Image (cartoon, rainbow, N blue to C red; front, side):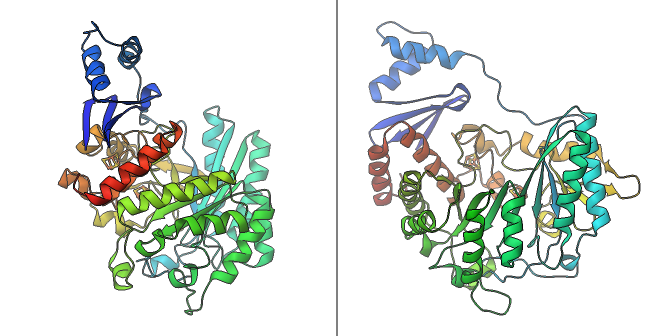
Length: 447
Ligand code: SF4
Ligand code: SF4
């Protein structure tokens, strides 16, 4: 399906046309067979009888471009500070394999959190940076603690003393009192709310006691919609719910006020399979995503899915190797959101330091940091010829590791590529071509 021509541009056969996509050059085009041959000739310097528009394209493609890079040396510009207040959670989602353990019940103590904030602000100031970002994660970051309220106030005060402006983000399941939701709505720049909508929330995301969570999370979503925060609704999409994405898009757009809706296909796990929940089939997901995106765009809402943002170029998929500082509840500094046991299973060590609460500084292990940066520096070989190279950039290093061994696109890659191509073609006004191509792929999945 995909014929790499040069590593800086990619050619994808779309029905009877060819999509040329050069993300580093900001160039895309749809060519027929004859035009593609002309382009390939022009790229070799053979310009006789070649359409001048194609010659100009070849000239642009020959311009040297610098791909995004992974940092090196000491940390001079951290991507963000992540604070994981607890690994524990008050939901029992049917697709989440997370098993509560003694480690998961640890809640960050306030002094560790404050020391992390102090060390982060110092790092910014020492490097002449006057804008920062603090993100809170869990488990469920608000579960069984009120540390976030204290840390936001503390960080805001410290930042204003240092002349630094800090943005606050949180990722939450939305189980909170109305009062706390109002506080979140007013105090966070962005909230990522995991929410599967009226038809699937209770089915996918029950409470610990087995009751449905829809009513509570709906209330939170309504409150967040009224606040100053940028609400991002994150939907986990299963094979069954994929067919309903347009309905879900309409429901979310008409009931709440999100800035964007992120549709994330379910990640296969033994628990999800035992609960009869499976990832969506790639072509069906891409088609329904495209239709849902139409509806969201009509309401001025962006549609997203991991690794398919064509508006930005990145050298790595996630915080790993990009100098994010993620502090675990016990004060260790990690590069990944997941628990150590999970990266260990993937044969990765993503810990590179700890917070020193006494000296209020980060103690980095620079050798470990460098080996973590090497992970996105050396993406799977397959990614080098993939048009998502600078968007998806290899995918999750823990959960999508197998393609390093397999050397062929798996269903996650196919889905990512199809959605990305849909975004490119929509922008080029070629939606009909895209939907026709998806129809062809449905009839001939091995194409
Ligand atoms: S992980 Fe798959 S989709 Fe992503 S860049 Fe690599 S080959 Fe492409
Ligand atoms: S490796 Fe995977 S789980 Fe870890 S931060 Fe990256 S995307 Fe998230």
